[in-house]
Structures are given as C-alpha cells and as structure tokens.
Image 1 (cartoon, one colour):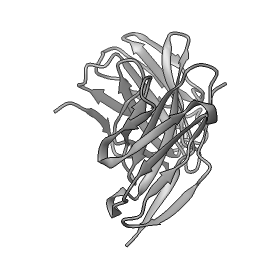
Image 2 (cartoon, chains in turn yellow, blue; image 1 turned 45 degrees about the vertical axis):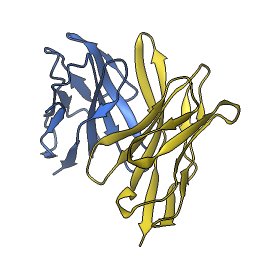
Image 3 (cartoon, chains in turn green, yellow; image 1 turned 180 degrees about the horizontal axis):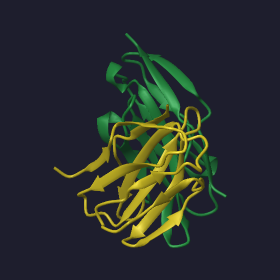
Image 4 (cartoon, chains in turn green, cyan; image 1 turned 180 degrees about the vertical axis):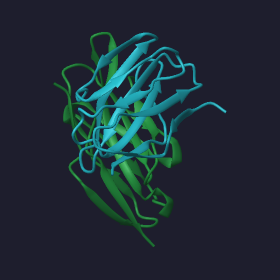
Length: 115
Length: 110
C-alpha cells in the first residue's frame, strides 16, 4: 500500500531564511507527487506536482521540489521564506485504485515564520 | 470565476440528526471527492465519484452517504451513524485526480 511520511511536524524559520520540508513516500509504481499548502480554516492550494520528466519541479509562490527516486523523496524548498508562507504543508502521492486516481496525504508540516 | 463552493462554512449537528454538506463546482471536472481532516492526521478519503450517478467508498465511508445527480454537485450527508463527526470536511475536484479543493466546512456537535 502507498504511504507518505512527513517527518517534521513543526518547523520554525526566520523570514528570509531558506526552507526545506521533507517528504518520503512508499509506492510500488512510478509515483505522481504533489505539494499542497493550507492556511488556517481554508482549503488546500496546489503548490506543484510531479508526473514525469525533469525531476526538479517549479511551483507557485517561489517553491520548488526535487524528486529523488533512489531516496523515495520529494522535498519542498524555497530559497527565501516570507512571513506569508506560514501555513500547513502537505505532501501527497497519487495512485490508481481500480480505474480511479486518488491521493494519499502525509500528516502535514506546520511552518512558523519568525520576523 | 471558476471554482469550488462549499457551504455552509460552519455547521452544527444535534445528536441523532443527519446533516448535509454542499459542494458545487463550475470547473467542469468529472471527478469529485470528499475528505475529512482531523488534527495531526492529514486528509482521509470518505467518498469519490468519477461520473454522474456513480460513486465509490473511500477509506472512511461508514456513517456517511453521497449522491451525484449532476456533474456540478456532490453533496455529503453525515448520518447519525457517524459517532465522531466533528471535523473539517473538504471537497475536491479534478479531471483525473483530486487537484482543486474548496474552502471546507467545519462540523461540530451541539
């Protein structure tokens, strides 16, 4: 069965510092991978996705992620964090269930940004 | 303006009562999904529908029911059989997989 692990429950960084959020997955086939961001009381916004091709994926809001098959990882990065980036971040793996594609989510990483 | 509309934003349920959460989309997506979100547990799939008049159970379907009479609408009913309904409920749509999410409905017990 597929699974997603986000090892860091909570990360705190200073504004302007770099950021890396970790994501490890377990899936028997080639994965479809996603990163979402959620502000309090809101839905999820898609930051970026990886289906195939270039393993370095660019997303919105200056985020990028790198797919490393050998490490089963899809870490999210940002070179300089802004206070508005404070939110909950979810990694997800897409998989086929019968004829339907679904997502399995990690448990999330809460990002706090210090001024 | 295309998007997903979930209503109400907040909902309260009394013991023994069924309540229905609305999800409407104008993105023309075939697939619609309902997720439940609890603190520290991420999102768990309740039901999903790939086409009109067809839907399948997800990982935690017990105590919930859905219908898909129109492409645009996928309401979720939380029945009295769901003993722990307090949670944040998210609706999602996608052409091939869930990608776009609504702003959610927070359900609480009175």
